[in-house]
Length: 328
Ligand code: NAI
Image 1: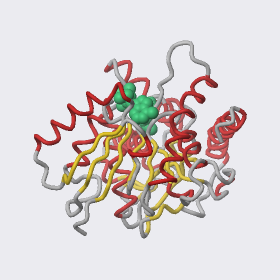
Image 2: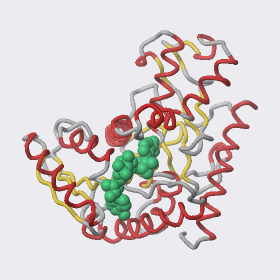
Image 3: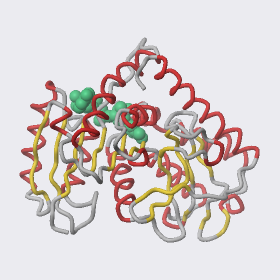
Image 4: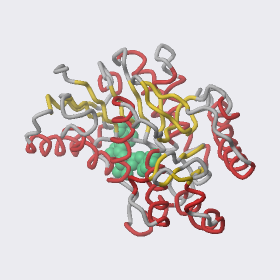
């Protein structure tokens, strides 16, 4: 349709914001037939930099960009939003305890959830990128009781893409030959990248790459600790790759996942695979008719079970901690 879609981006003046906004405005988020109106939400200190980015967006003369508005207050920022990318968050700084981190982010995601509840469009889709992404998504979701819980998602697509790339390198194949990879659990170092249902050009990945030592000693830790490796190398955290993953997530959510394949996303658990109902955990997911569905019926062996359980236990701890802090 030619009605512009309202896309709210929080943390618009940050480094992911800078990598993300141009991709959205060029049509990569929703497709080449959908005009977008950008709603940039920042804290007051970030507004001036967001205005600078808006000037550059103007200067690109993107045919699909139907407007840019800048806000420093969530109720205005989410008014009429069809898609919300919650990128701005409070990073962990030296000496910060987990409770402090969760509280600081609760102070951001609670009012944002309430603002989405109050003013977003009926078809609102939310992707939380800002860390701790799964628990921030849970906080926002809990404060938006009128929005279907399934509309709140957390980003594990960057982990998924990292896993695709590592597996492709090991197998010596293009990434496009790999399907059915899964990230389970939390977007954190406990996440479990699972190759046991993955296929490489239609053959089981675990037959093509029959190397348990590599899987345990290299692949899993490399994917799980990739964020830290990027910071060590670049002196700043992943930005363009994070923005790319956010684009992939929303594009697939709206347009569907390819036939025969699936991807990974943090979505509200319905109890599948023993993940407690209501937690926002990463699962193997397909997008069908504009909705995420958990891929059912996969065998989970002992090796995978232990790793999924460990990551889910961390999600339970985070949920219990934010409950104790009165954030949900
Ligand atoms: P950044 O620090 O460059 O930018 C964050 C921006 O958010 C700043 O401009 C800040 O002013 C803004 N902000 C803070 N509180 C806000 C609020 N209440 N409302 C609106 N804006 C607010 O950070 P960067 O590098 O862009 O990363 C953003 C987040 O994404 C971080 O939490 C980071 O850990 C997370 N991240 C998540 C990934 C994932 O795979 N899920 C991957 C990479 C980063």
